[in-house]
Image: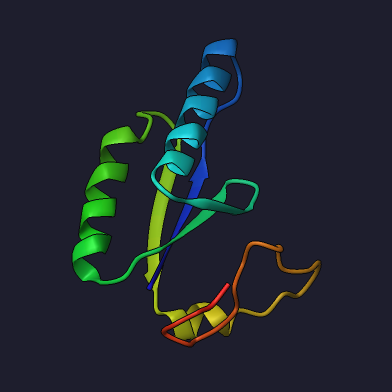
Length: 101
């Protein structure tokens, strides 16, 4: 399964920018990888891992702005189509349970 996190945070003041930067750093510390600006994804193995990640993310979200979280299966994630641009080098597009790097 993949968890896809979307966020839109205010960037008006220096304080807002600091909150934004801190939130992004915490997301990467939790294992999220940037798909595009303000869209991050994380591979989770099962629903228990998903719930733990959800709870940890909920603790770090800023009080202002919008943060959304969507969980999709690997098959759904792999079927994503790029309408413009290309997929990132870090993304592995496969429905296989085992991936050898």
